[in-house]
Length: 332
Image 1 (tube, rainbow, N blue to C red):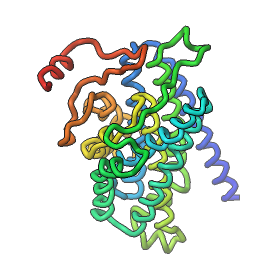
Image 2 (image 1 turned 180 degrees about the horizontal axis):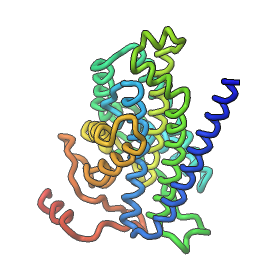
Image 3 (image 1 turned 30 degrees about the horizontal axis):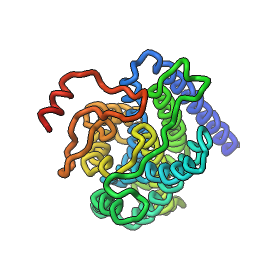
């Protein structure tokens, strides 16, 4: 009787979460019609960043595993998308099929990287795990340079996702990319909310509170930590795939140490363990923190140059002339 009641309550909670996610997604999609192209471009970047901060707040807030290199997980998703979508485009595949294959590549590669980090996290604690993730983000440029097929410092090009013909008359490219980002963010974050509010979330909190007591209660801390890392990594990887689509490129310069630390600061400021706080943190990180997707590039010291990124593709708008342009002239 008690188990049946608990199951019905869990199903009702999941149904409520999904319905809220659908409602918020529809509202966000509708809001894109009120924004200009550049603001829609920014909205896409915010949605991609939200994927990463939502996963990171779950990882740090619920299990206590500190990741200083979450940008690497976003990079894994971006590279996974590019490595699959690029050959698919060369083979003549386009549209939804190519995009779905690219997303599948992002999911697989980010899940593999997250699983490996989760296995390490099951053995490492505190500063040791933080040091491992920090080493990964520092080593990313060297790995991209040495591993064949990753495009070295220039990164990999990503096929352009054009507006579908039925929607070409009502929206521009930036709005379509914002739609893609919003839907992907909903798909990435909603399972995290379900995970957080269900039995898995309780096991994560128990493991974080006292691993010995969790073991006595029949909970495997190692399994919980690996699950949390994989879930966080997949969400971040989807965010990286969205950034790759929006920027039409994925490279190591977009995922510097400064960006990874910015993600961590964003979830701390927003509130660890809070998905709503992760959304606020993602907004701040993307708009006020010098997000790499909004920049011409990143200097060698990892500090970003706050200049909106121009695009060579047709139809791509840039920010109106203003202080950013003057800053770019001074930096040059």
